[in-house]
Length: 497
Image (cartoon, rainbow, N blue to C red; front, side):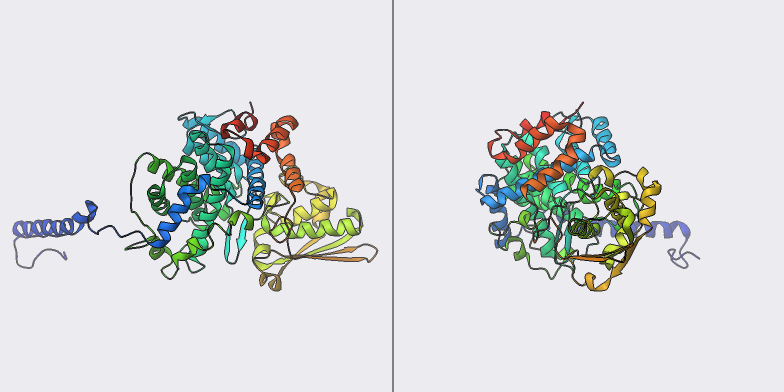
C-alpha cells in the first residue's frame, strides 16, 4: 500500500497534490538555504585574539631570526628528511610516486627527488612526501598522546613552493620550522578527546600549509584564509592503512595527502582565493567540529619560545619505532660484552604492549622486530640496506638466529608511553646472562644524536642513490643553508639520471 497517495482522492489529483507538495518543500528548502548559498547567511565574525596573533606570527616567520640551537636542530631534521626522500626513491612506494609525477606532467617548476623529473608544486609535494615516508626512516614526534611524522610532509611542501618562489636557504629553513610549530600545535591543542581517528594527516596538512604559506610569502589576512583551507581538508583518514604491506598507502596517509593539501591551500590563497577570516572561532568553527572542549589558546602557547622541531625525534635506526629501543639495547650489550651470534642461546625482548603488536612477526623486514634482532646479531649493526632486504628474511642463517628471539609485550613499559622503552635479555650458551634497559632511545630529545651521527645516517641512505661525491656536496649544502641564495641550488644534487 502506498504511503503517499491521499485516501479517496483520484490518482490524477493525488499526483498533482504530491507535485505541489514537492515544489513547496523544495521552495522552502531553497529559501532557507539561499542566504548560505550566497555566503551571507551569517555575518563574518571578528577575528579572535588567537587567530590574530597566530596569523601575524606566521606572516613574518619567513624573515624572523631564529635561535642558533633551533637553526642547528632544523638542519638536522631537514638533512634527515632529504635522506629519507633520496633513499625512498629506490623503494616500491617511491618508485610508484615518481611514476605518478612523470605521467601526470604539469608545469616544470619543482624537483622530484632521486629522478630527473620536474613538475608542478602540488605533484612534487605529494611525490616527495611519499618518498620521505616510503619506509620508517623519517623523523617522528611523540609527546603525551600525540604521535606524528612531521618532516616527511612539511619539508617536501616547503621545497616544492620554495623552488617555485625562488626563496633562499634560510627562508626555506624558517618555513620548515614554522610548519612544525603550526602542524604539531594544531593537533596537540585538539587533545586526546578529539573526534578523529588519526592525527598524522592533520599534522601534515596544517604543517605543510604553514610551511607553504611561509614559502610563498602570504600576509596575515592570507594566512587566515590558508588556515581555513587547511581546516577544510583536514580529514584524518582511517586505520585501514595498517593492512598495506607495501607501506604505500601509509606513506600517502602520513605524508603525501597532507603535503598535497597544504601546498594546495597555499597556492589557492596566493592566487587570490578568500575564505572565512577565522576558522578557529565563531559558528561551525574548526574546534567545534573536532574537539569542542579544546582551548584554541594552545595554538599560541609559547609561540616563538618553544619550537616543536626541537622536540621532534630522529631515528638512529631505519626501522619501525617500537624496534628502536630494542636495537639500542642490543647494540649496548654488544659493545659492553662482545659476542658472536652462534654464542647466543636466547634473546628475550620486552617492548610496550601496543608497540609489540605493531612489530610482531611482520612481513616487512624493517617492521619485524624478530628479524631485525636477528640481523643485528649477525651484522653487529642494522644498515638501511639490511633493513629493506626482503630476500634475507628467508636466509637460513637469519632464520636460525630469529628462532632464538622471543618478543614479550610488557604492560609496565606500556605505562611509560610515550617513552618507547625496551628491555633486552641475552642468554649465552655458557650461561652468561646480559641485560640492558633503554629508557631514552638514541635520537630522541632526551638522548639526541650528534651532527656527526645524523650525517653518518644520511650517508648510509643517500650514497647508493646519489654516489659519494654528490652525497657529500648535498650534505654540505643542507648544513650550510645559511649561505644558499636560492633553494633551487639543491636541484642538481638531488637528481639522478
